[in-house]
Image (cartoon, rainbow, N blue to C red; front, top):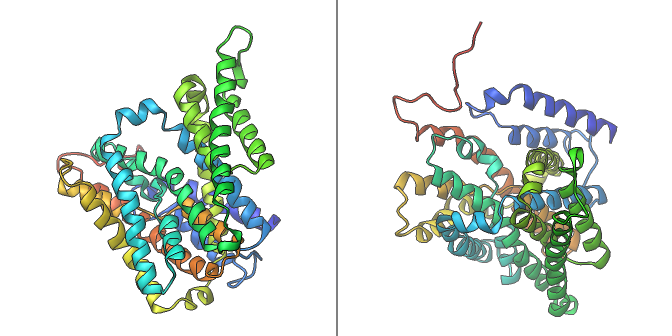
Length: 399
């Protein structure tokens, strides 16, 4: 593990040193961490000896997804959702279920999976991640409504896809293990903990008796998150739904606490994403990819170039978006961090089709990371007017 920490630190430093160059070229930190993980994996060089069912992998994935869902939820208070809901609402209300359904149909007929497993793949691949389209969502010369659409959609769809993943995973596990009442209680308990803990803490801080001052202000959300994590784990409530609900509640009633934590939360979230991507890359190898039949490769391609574009085409009919904006939104549905963790949860559940699902989803995610994070600058440039300086270029250097 010391060697892994050294490699992660060195890779992070390289990513930092070349971040300005990556912001205006096809270079990508996500691809870098994925490639380094691939290179050090047990079936490549053997530097890092991990497999998809190891405790270390599941622990890293669980903690990282909790933090990401918590910080994602904190971006989306109810007031924010009401102000920016028109276009993201179409993408989430229509685009998400349609993407799930189209992906499931492809998985059923191309991979020969039963419907529960096919729907499970659809749910795993439905969420999107803006980190692989950073040059697009971070460029102010790209229309604000498009950037807002992608940001709000990706911030919310992880949490919305989660119940589908949990239900389809339970169904795929077999009728003997399926207890929908117990599953419903876990989801309900997770939501209740995620809502109750921030509400109690923040309401208490707004009384005369309690107050957070100085360095303790940004620690408030951290304390809330840790307590939510501990309570959900202790009561067997759904950990991830608790995280997302807690983040939304903090954003809704604790604007001061949200602002104090925002920058730190983003940094921690991105670091954990990069860590998880390197671990994910270490689970891949040429042998692993060679085990996938040609139908699996074709499915992965269609999941990227057909499922989301078709779903969003129908979702945005009559929306007022220009064709260029629609094409950008349809293409940038990268399969990112949440999909990585959801498929690792599937592997740990040991369902009959788990190995096939892991192979197919892992291939799709890897292809998405490479394709989307290598084209975001190109697409962003298409929105820059001829007489404007690209936002990522900045002023000329002073020598």
